[in-house]
Image (cartoon, rainbow, N blue to C red; front, side, top):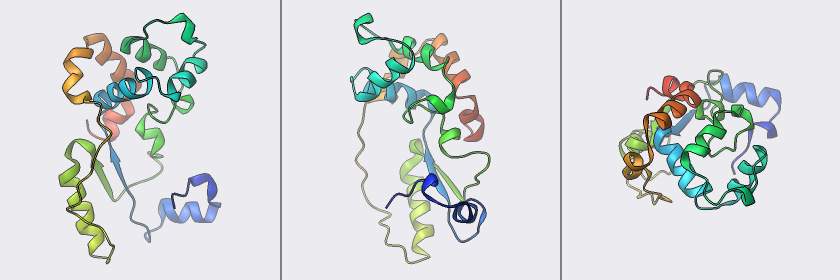
Length: 171
C-alpha cells in the first residue's frame, strides 16, 4: 500500500511530482525534538539503528559504555545526509525538497489542528478519513526533556545539520 519512488517508472514519478491529479502532503517534526526523540528511542534505547549508526561511523559497541546525545550529534554532523538512517536524515532530503512541492505541510507540533484541516480537505473528495480520530504516539517525551539534554553546543550542531529543515519548514 505504500509505494516507494524507486518502484515507479519515470512517467509515473513525473505525474506524481508535478501533476495536478495528486494531492501531495507531508507532516514534519521540529528538528530539536525530532533528534532528541530519535536518540532516546533508537540509540539510547538500543534499537537496531544504533548498531547501523555505529558501523557507519566506524564505532564499536565495545568502545562505549555510554554514548551521549552530544556524541550522537557530533557523529551525525560528519555524515552526508543521504547516508544517514531515515530516522535522523534531514526531512528536506526525505521529502524531495525542493524538487517536490506540497499542497499541505503539516507539523507534528500542531498535528490535531493540521490533521483536521487535511481531513476536511479529503472529505470534499469523499475520502474515508476520520478527522476526529485519536492518534496514539510511540512517545519518548522528548519535548519535556529538551532542557535536560540541550546545551548551546547541542543547539549549534542541530542548527548546522538541519539548516535546510529549519528553512524549508519555517521552524
